[in-house]
Length: 122
Image (cartoon, rainbow, N blue to C red; front, side, top):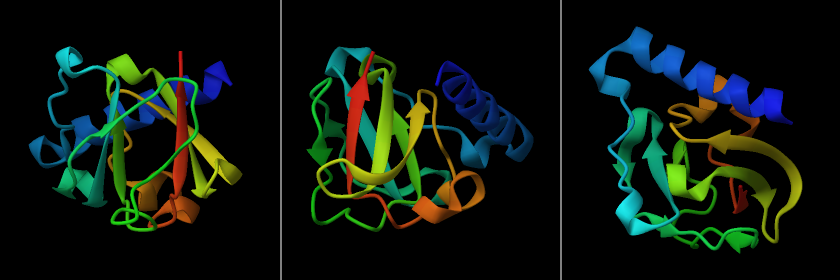
């Protein structure tokens, strides 16, 4: 599992570096506590307000975001998060950690517009 977290971070950093400033993850603030940023489009475009995270607790994404997320960023305070394509943290999943997954279609195509719940952990 640690290898998959490292791979996600490396992939995000490489994609961001290669693509230039258009795909840079938004600046995250630790002062706000654990949060997840979810965006309607790749490269952090058309983002919703950050979701406050309860560590080690399954959370359904708000209905307004359900099955619409194309880029996602847990902040450093959130640790790593497992994202699921069903409510109640059920079904297929993947793990993401700060700094980001700037393009679900590129990195996890089966989860583009198909995230309904998540759980973050340290």
